[in-house]
Image (cartoon, rainbow, N blue to C red; front, top):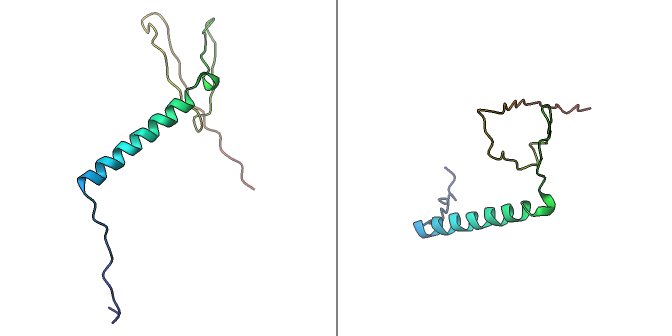
Length: 87
């Protein structure tokens, strides 16, 4: 150990600090979801006929399914991954 060694400074974190950080994180997530789900950013699909297809980019899209009667309608979901061609 060098002669000028100083122990690392570790900030003290209290349960109150952690609660505050969690609360701030939740507020930020709520704010982001409120922004991203504005009507101008929402695309709702009206399924018209068998074989209708929707494709989205999972890297930059929030998506969810709406309730449907899975005893009557079949839902076929497949994942496709596109690899980037780097030069």
